[in-house]
Length: 195
Image (cartoon, rainbow, N blue to C red; front, side):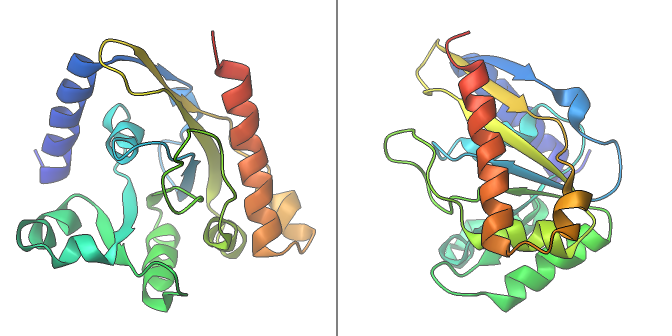
C-alpha cells in the first residue's frame, strides 16, 4: 500500500466518522487517461474529500508555504501535491501540471484559488481553463455541497465530462474556458442542493 492509498483510507475513516458523506457520480471518472477535476472550494477538507472515495490518485497544486513546513515538505509530494506560488503566474507549477496531464494523470483543481468565505461559488481563475485548453484532458466539473457540520450530510458530486473538444475548436480564452467550467459547477450545486 502506497502512502497515498494509506492517506486515502485514513481520510475516508475520518470523513465518514464526522459527516454523512454521500458520493454521487463516481462512474463519471474515467478509469485511465488524463483528467482534470474542477471543484468548488468551501473548506480545507475539500482536497481530501475530492480524492478519498475514488480509486485513482489525484495530484494537487498546494500553496508554496505548506512546502516550507518541516513535516509537510517531505509528506506532501508523496500525497500527490506540488507547490504553486499564489498571486503570480507560476510557470514551474503550470509545467508540472501540464506534464502530469500529458502522462495520463489526474489533477484536482479548485479554480477559485481560495476558499469561499460564505460558501457561495466565486469567480474562477484562468489556470483551470489553461490546463483544459492546452491538454486533451477530460474535464469533469465537481461540487462539494456542505456545510461541514458534524453528523450532517456532505455531498461529493462528480459531474459528467464536459465536451471540451468543441470548446477548444472555438478558440476561447483561458478565462472564458474557466467560466464555462464554473457555470457547470454552479449547475451541479443548484441541482443537488436540498435534496
